[in-house]
Image (cartoon, rainbow, N blue to C red; front, side, top):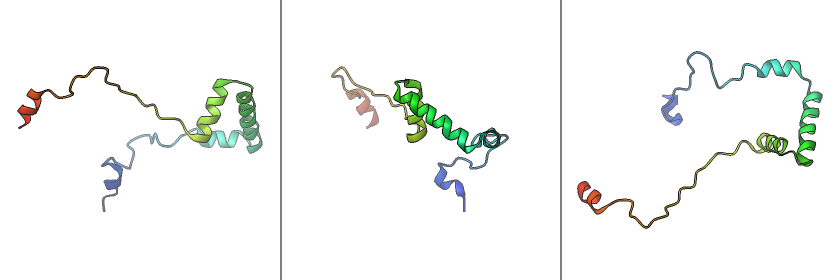
Length: 91
C-alpha cells in the first residue's frame, strides 16, 4: 500500500539532509541539564510577567505553539466577482 496516500502525495522520505530532524537537539540535550532548562524557562516566565513582550511571546509560542498568520480579505466595492460575460463564456 502506498503510504503517501494520506500525505497529499508528498514523499515521506527526505532526500539528502532530513530537515524534519534538528541536528543540534541532541547536542543541546547533552550540554544542558534538566535543572538548567527549568531555570531558563522560569526566567522567561518571570520576564514575561514583568512586561517583557518578547519573553511573553516566547512563553506562549512554546506552550501553545506558534500562531498561524492569516489574512483578512475584504471587498470594499459592490462589484460582482464575475461579470456576465465570464458566465456566458463558461456556458
